[in-house]
Length: 409
Image 1: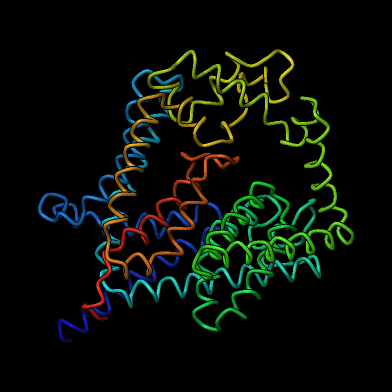
Image 2: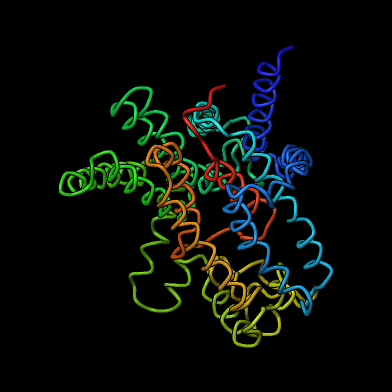
């Protein structure tokens, strides 16, 4: 077998490994298997960190995430958990290096993005099937929201689909033009709304704004397009409000915030206010390096009110995380941790701005997904959890791809 064929086979195998991480995400920790294998294969790429300047963005992205947890560990309230997380997250650096080596050509990246869009399309169609029949690949729907392929015990469908929807919408636009883009956007809208996660509604709204702005070239046309999209979205929401009692309950809870009192606002926010107050208290008590990564639940009783609904006096723990990534970083890793995040994000934003225009176009849907994933004015999954961390670094692996149209597969 020629060296060219061998290289092509390795790239195909590497692309499949990256794709499998997405395929297995609905099944919990099973997605860690392809990630671990990719990280092990990526260990042989570690020497490139010294000699290849193209790997610098990978190192910056990794350190912005990993250094805060390392600095939080020495005096963490739960040191075993903190140090375990520090060691476990080392896998993300060789994962980035592996993807960096595999995605060196634009056609390879486009193929991975296209296959990822196909996976998301399966999730979307499965969710629509569940909405109409009550059944899906994730089992029957027994909760108050659409669960789809993720299942009733893992209600992440809305948030994950909304975050990754740019990959699907971008592929629909490339395959069938604006008609396909509109159709895919509407189908995603219905599923995200029925999935019931209001944080996902905000995320998907941001996705549509970004996609429309680019599609219509900005300016007045884009603003008009956003207005039309808003009308379509409100019409869909009103129809679902009439047809779906579960969706209507989520809307009623949201509108309760308009009553003006704190209790109504807390109800509308799914009782997040006590968690955020406790997070602010922990930040005040541990301002520099926080309570330790993943230590929020263990430090929670130190600041929680006596009647806090999330407080478990038997186990002496509280809410699992801060449900807002800035508060999570500040409470668990302190000002030092947030400084690392801000420096890393700023450096990567400038680096991306200097990339070749075609490279920025190739990764545009991934850029949108990362922006909405990290949008600070929203509630979030735990940033340092295995699931959210994996999702973040899977997107970073695609976004940091050093694609070159001069190379072929």
